[in-house]
Length: 267
Image (tube, rainbow, N blue to C red):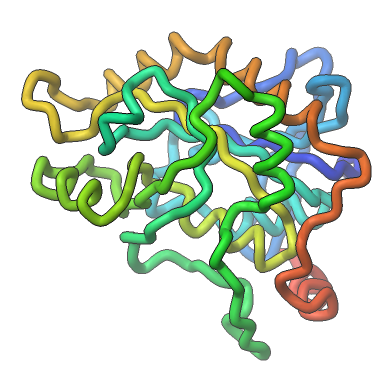
């Protein structure tokens, strides 16, 4: 039995490992060329939605070891056209204080060694990345979260799993970053390579390493994200509800090339 096709997916970041009541959802394993992925389907805001936790249930996958290609391929194989994701972030810009919800619109990649393209054999495709998150989804999210979220922000994606030094935190701010995260790259460009639109709801859990009066820790991040989970899920529901039924993602890669990737044999 295969999972019902759905056009919308939610990827949960740190602290968001389930989305639906177990009795009202179905979890199945999707075989991909990059390994198996567990995907749960259920109803959110009256829409059929696929869900997977980015780090795995129980936060078992470190940021640099997440199987990003398997996750995105699995969702694409189910017919997903739009991904709404959450992320725990630090605020390196004082205008993005802890407790803020942010709709990221740009990223600065500071990762290395991650498998970050599907076009690594047989075909070379150059992805346009000037606007990495889908403008149409971002606009829908702006309408849904007006007065609730900060409407734009540049996220610097670091390798992890360690947090920044104070010098790095100041450097990121000087480079134009507003928030810092460990996982949005390569997830966002990989989705774009398969012509899936993305929008991200980031929750600022801390001020990164810059302030000297607070010691940043994973425990602090998880505790604050857990406290904010009702707000985050409410934001997810609002954004999912705001995605038009007629939504069509940008074709940043030739559909024939995308079809060739999705035709690869699952392992």
